[in-house]
Length: 462
Image (cartoon, rainbow, N blue to C red; front, top):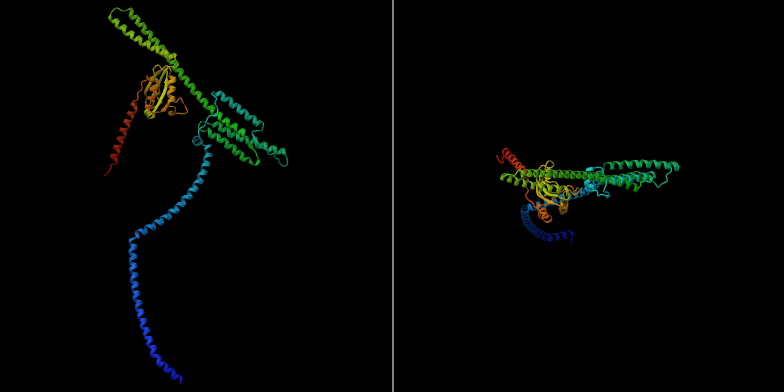
């Protein structure tokens, strides 16, 4: 068979088959496309629905979401600030340590800081007389001079040579020693000359600091101040300070002795005046008795006898006060206007009129008068005063000067102590403080006037 015919025959037979298959495939493809479009539409609807739900949820919880974001932002800021704070604290600690070092050095030369920063000086010597201090100061200075003369005040163990010469090396060291001693002695003299009660510890540190600085400058030459010489300078400083304090105490003691002597003279004068008064009434009584001639003179004699008895009693009492050094009055007084509540003064006077001493204390030294709570006569007044002082030793206001007899203590406690130590004494708890209360009243009235004026000028509302 002809090949062409065969091909044509095959094509004629198979063409309808391919056409049918193509049509079937096209129909299936169309069906699948339709299904895909339907599925896509459903998917789009679901996506739109989910998107709507998402937007609704986002809108519903937007506040929470924004707060969380704000919290996260603030936490980030806080973390950064914490890092900055840590860095600042570290820097501050370093600078504070440096400042403390500088302040401790400045305090040695700044008297305003010295007493508060460096502490209270404790005495190192138990001399009771200023002459003992003077003798000890002379002794210490002589020991310093001996060390300088023996070239022991500064030490240089190295044997130096200059240009190969030991003699020149020794000359150099001697010159440097003289400069060293001059510098150190100048520092010490300045410290000793300016030492006072409130800077003595600072002056000690100033001398030690000067010694350390001078030794540091001489390090290259291996030259140092002798520790024993520095200790002698410190001892001289302390002796000088305590010597000056002893002079103050002796001055106070002399003033106290002068006051006591003045009181004794006054007591003697009062005793003599009382004796003269007694003698006067005795003479008047004797004269009245000689001239007695009726009831009128009898009454006059009785009056003179009573007056004479009172004068005799006053004379005996004045004579006893003048002769008995241990008799006197222990007084307990307060001054709320000047010193506030719960401050009392417990003192002793040997005056015949003890209230005169209280008036004297309140005359010019304080703005208000004292109130008297007890005036206790005793044949052993110093012992009673000492017992009361001991009772309230921890309440003493001035712990440095025991002649300042003020105590911060409640009147109830003082009353209890008086009842125990002097059972027959009368104690008054009331504080009259008339001038103080009148002053308060005037101040309050003035304050009310000022408040009223202010209220008129600046009303609460308009």
